[in-house]
Length: 165
Image 1 (cartoon, rainbow, N blue to C red):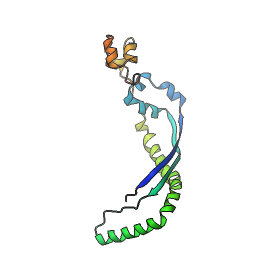
Image 2: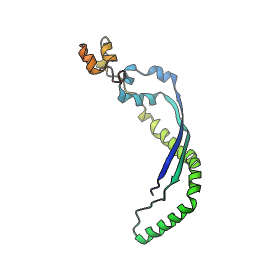
Image 3: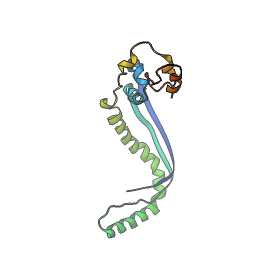
Image 4: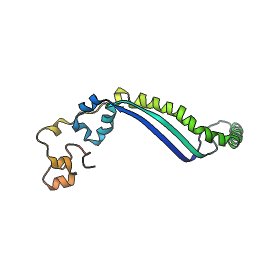
């Protein structure tokens, strides 16, 4: 089933709470690498859910249902869906915010809880130990690679790529 929505307006609200003890335990070297940022942020969340998910649309296109074995059945269903669309499009447009904020939000919150907040997805990787040995060269920490190299630093972002993005 394909349904086209046009001129969509979405109002999305999140509730996010962080565990302060977890924040203090994140190694700084981990969050300075952009590939680790998202998992590290997830690892300090104590709660995350959609508090509002309101979708509005100016128009809803006629549903397209495909995959029938018989062309006669497909033609009959297309005629029925066309008639329903013509009669009820206004009602569907009016019902969309309620459907999205009640049912779709519930499904999305289940996905957030089951996937994003699953312990297997929220591990903040430890920093590379070899990057943390010795004194910190602030040229490598605070400058991009090219600029750091021009000042005789390593220039290979040994502490992560976040500070100069």
